Image 1 (cartoon, protein in one colour):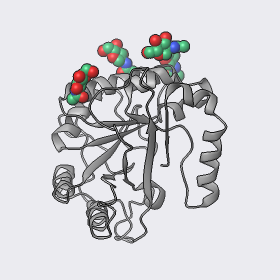
Image 2 (tube, helix red, strand yellow):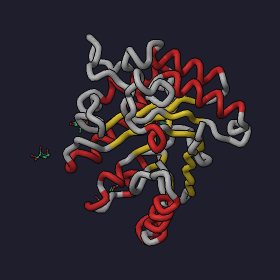
Image 3 (cartoon, protein in one colour):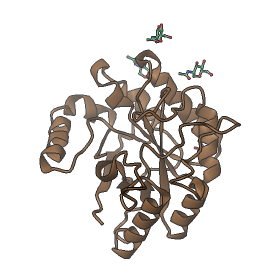
Length: 248
Ligand SMILES: *[C@@H]1O[C@H](CO)[C@@H](O)[C@H](O)[C@H]1NC(C)=O
Ligand SMILES: *[C@@H]1O[C@H](CO)[C@@H](O)[C@H](O)[C@H]1NC(C)=O
Ligand SMILES: *[C@@H]1O[C@H](CO)[C@@H](O)[C@H](O)[C@H]1NC(C)=O
Ligand SMILES: *[C@@H]1O[C@H](CO)[C@@H](O)[C@H](O)[C@H]1NC(C)=O
């Protein structure tokens, strides 16, 4: 199995205020499915590579067996395309029942039993980038659902959202996560979604544990290099606010 790892480096500037939920005091290290598996939901034709509970269980096993856990990689992260297209009768998100027959809670229990943590994906807008239900209008319900499931990290995307309300949405979800009483690492796509409008990094660092500044990483050196080049050429805006650099 090809394991592509996500490393987020963060360097905090002690003068500025940062989100205080006790998490991400050292760089977040783990694995995120998108670069390798994207939105492959075809479990009939491609059962070993589709977005399903089996994939994350297998990845957790590999992270332990091949020494990644011992090296510090801790988070097994689900990206887009995990949910059902419909919320349940109480308005809660639910995992696609065919691809996640055990549900997310059981998957989180499995990942925890390996000494690892589970990350999940949501979106600040009406839909996720791939068209699944987004959290707009449901921030508190979704935060509580993730907490009830025992999820440890939320990657919160920025698709299908009115740009003038995007920052407010990220802030509201941050408050909703805090209100659950469970510390959940909050990873925001806010600056990326706002790139053309000059993101307010002061607000972002008060709201999120870390954030993603630039485009998706693909399976090539030129992709990795284009992201580090962008980061290098934007030191003027990134460094004064304390910076975070990651590959997703
Ligand atoms: C919620 O926010 C308060 C104030 O910043 C902080 O002290 C507390 O640890 C947070 N709780 C969680 C669960 O994130
Ligand atoms: C976006 O939100 C602003 C402020 O609420 C509103 O004035 C505007 O009409 C909205 N735009 C769209 C396309 O919904
Ligand atoms: C954020 O929360 C405030 C206060 O509850 C609310 O007025 C506002 O509409 C919310 N914004 C979004 C985008 O959810
Ligand atoms: C950026 O966010 C900070 C913290 O929320 C706020 O005090 C400041 O006014 C914002 N700056 C701009 C230019 O909106």
